[in-house]
Amino acid sequence: MGDDGDLDKLSEQLDAVMRRLDLIEAVLTEQKQYPELAALMGDLKMSAALYNEPLKLIQRLITARRVIQRSEEPRDEVSRIILNSLAVKGAMNVSALSREVSATRGTASRVTIRKRLKELLKEGAVVKNEDGTYRLRE
Image (cartoon, rainbow, N blue to C red):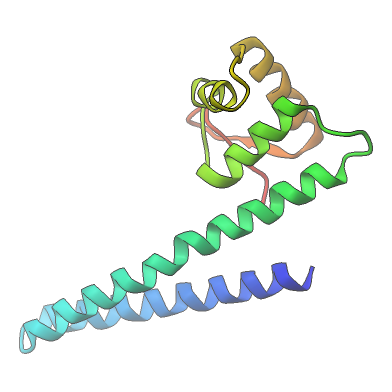
C-alpha cells in the first residue's frame, strides 16, 4: 500500500508542476515580451508529460495485480487477459478487448468477453464508461 501512496503523491506533484508550467506559459504568451521563453515552457511541459503516462500505466498495473490476487478462486485466462489489457492500454470496448484476447490466446468470442466483463463489473473490478468502453476501477 505504501508504494501505491507514493505513486499517488508523485502523480499529484507532477500534476501540480504541469499546472504551474501552464500558468507560466500563459503569462509569457500573453505578455509577448519573451516568445522564446514561452516556447521553452511548452517544451518543458511536454517533457513533464512524458513522465505522466508511464506513471499512470504503473498505477493501472498495480490495480490489475490487486484485482487478480484478490479473488478467492484463480482467475480464468480470459479475465486475466482482459484485466492486463485494460491495465496496459487503458479503456477499451468489447471489440478491442476481443482483439487483445484473440492476439494472446489465438481465439476470442465477443460473447465470452461480454460475459467476463459482466462478471468483472459485478465484482467491482472494472467500470463501464459512458462511451461504452471499460476501464479498471481505480
